[in-house]
Amino acid sequence: MTTPLDGVRVVDFGQFIAAPAATQILADLGADVIKVEPVHGESSRSIGIYGEAILRNYNRNKRGIAVDLKDARGRQIARELIAGAEIVVENLRPGVMDSFGLGADTIRAAHPHIIYATVSGFGANGPSKYRAGLDIAAQAESGIMSVTGEADGEPQRVGFPVVDSAAAHVFAQAILGSYIRKLRTGDGDTVTTSLLEVGVHLQGPNWGEYLLTGNEPIRKGNGQATVAPAADVMPTRDGALVVSAYSATHFDRLCHLLGRPELAGDPRFATNEARVRNRSDLLTELRAEFAKMTSDEAMALLIPNGVVAGRISSYGEVRKNPDVEAAGIFVTVTDPAGVPHTTLGSPWHLASMPQSSTVGAPALGQHTHELLTTLGYPATTIDALTTDGVIR
Image (cartoon, rainbow, N blue to C red):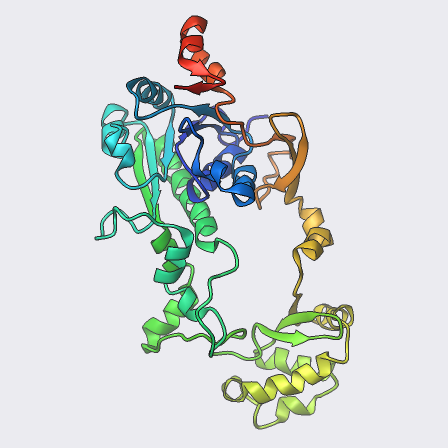
């Protein structure tokens, strides 16, 4: 049995999340991903537990080599690795790969079959193309923070690197699309995306409303601006739910399930527009009923009757969620020392690919000897070039 990307070699110069997470998708589809790091290791290796979490989640089943791209020998090895690859991925500070002679134009001129993929902070064409970019800057400048938080509070970031994570999936999607074209034509391609573009695109419904009306979306905390009840929090005796029932049918059903059928005919709540205008009164009425129940009781009442609701869960509760367990999103891998640990797998399944055991992120330079041998370097040269798997 072969995997979709069996035999496809990817050279990954990525750091942090957007690029390594994209190549993690390619690795999970069967690609041979070679992680190229500087001699001191990629940036995630030096920022403590957060960096370790990034390394573990986004570098499974990759082979690692550490080279100094500021040195001619390191650049030569990088060029040799690229020559044997079909896909090159990078998200270094704009201009860095060009300064090494490893930028898209140079590589694509030498190897027209290669797909060269870059994810940047702010895109390749605007005035900020050379600016360093991280998730938080993209959340701020894409408008995400302006619509996140309470109406009378300060703008809030989403509680995890949402743009980085989404950019990885967008990036991988574009790379795979380009690879399909390559299979048909034999030609490589240059693929680009940016955190800013992804951050804007994530907000499609908000942008749709803004482009239709010209009205700026504003922070309102929970709940959706133009429908109600929608994404509204309902505290229970032992926790809280989020509930959406804004169509006429579902709102009527919700009122009957709560034993308050008269609310559906109340002039304040009789239409969606009325409920939006009177959201505060609506929440007062609904929350009074949910406060009488436990979260389990509320979920047992709503879910079998087709009302959309979700229990607001802690990470510990998510870890024990039977649907999460059944999905197999958490996987056990083995680190370079042979110690098993749990990390995240990819959130999709292919019937053609049975779940297999995986290995964790490589140690710095773990596969340097192996990869140099593959490139034809004799053992004496490898020994002279490397120290503890790092080419210095």
